[in-house]
Image 1: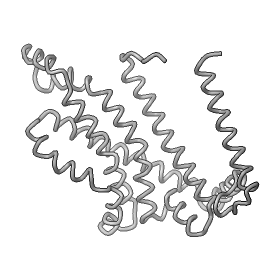
Image 2 (image 1 turned 180 degrees about the vertical axis):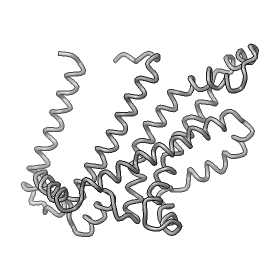
Image 3 (image 1 turned 135 degrees about the vertical axis):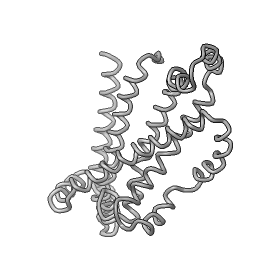
Image 4 (image 1 turned 60 degrees about the vertical axis):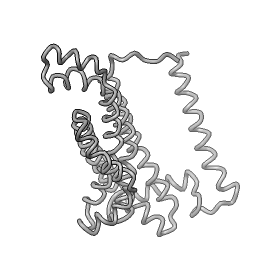
Length: 255
């Protein structure tokens, strides 16, 4: 039996044990369903949400703005990271302001965005962009600092332009860090969208979490959290597949 298949069977076995315990323990320990619902309670509630609470619409909205916020935030983070990496002067000038904005809790901006733009999709999109922006920026900037200077000097000796140096040396050298930053950002994008929906949304899985909590409907909250996890996992797996294709030339560690 191959190692990968063994890993799959072990993971599936752990999941099965967790699901069985989830179904059995709350009832055995006499835990009320409004605190910890059983698996069957959550599945029954999922069917009710699908029928009466526009579950598909809420899930699609959250997934859409997760992807949009991730794409915009990642593009901005990568672009500014490369620009600052190419200009040490501007990096030193701008870095204190970037650090200050990075330290500031991004979720605290959500109420401010709601005051500015109202109760619509813009606040959750902006929070997502802010949260995604920094991991990508920091990873790209750090990678630009560690590019082999000997290669850069050699390229200059051969009269390559600044753009050619970037395309042929700096960009390929920083791709592993960029992809790592994107994978980190993909997990944070779901958090950004959820925060925006919790604070001021009227659609999305974050809104269902807020609504379910107000109704003491723990099963609804569990279902919404599970769907958010699936969205984040799907985005992460897509990026892993892209990374495998883009960085196919890198040797893989053998375990």
